[in-house]
Amino acid sequence: MRRLDPKQLAMGVKVEKEHASTVAWLRKHPEASLDDAAAHIATDHLKELPDYYTLLDKMERTAKKKGNPPVQQLMQRLQENLTPDLLKPGYGGSHRVAGHCYVASEALWHLTGKKLHPTRARDEQGVVHWWLEDDDGNIFDVTADQYLEAGSKPPWEDGQRKGFLTKEPSARARELMRRVLDL
Image 1 (cartoon, rainbow, N blue to C red):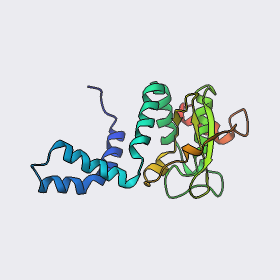
Image 2 (image 1 turned 60 degrees about the vertical axis):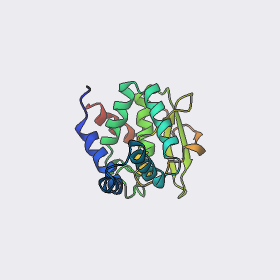
Image 3 (image 1 turned 30 degrees about the vertical axis):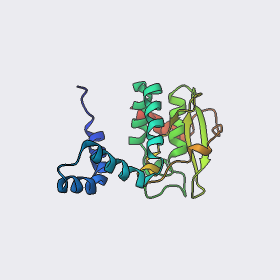
Image 4 (image 1 turned 90 degrees about the vertical axis):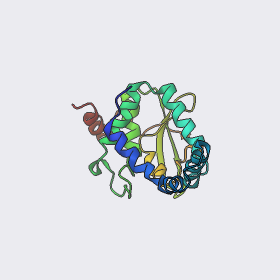
């Protein structure tokens, strides 16, 4: 069996505590079938996001298709290295990765050899969100958690491919890339 990343496990445990009501229901109904339990868990997810399973399927297909470990590892390392000093003035929010979508996408674009397409759209609050896509529309969004963990969805459906402001990495992107590559 592949060894689990303890950080990922801790993140998963925190998120999956949302199923506490389902666990309580199962304790009261020990005769419940696996299908009953699965239906309760699915309901928990669908209450958060009505198209939760469509989004999950798209992300899993992306990870399997383009999930060569380097890209996925880069995305994880980028997310781990996002800090307030990389934010432009006036950006940020309540989530740890909020306001970092441009610099994270720009850094990933350079780190992957500029083979993915910079894509952006306005979210429900009118804020521009950036991510990368491949030619098949698979999504590589380093900062998607700011939406998903809040029970909303990133504005992927409205995405338009756009270029970054510069062809060379910005100062913020260079700093983030330096951290990710441990330079």
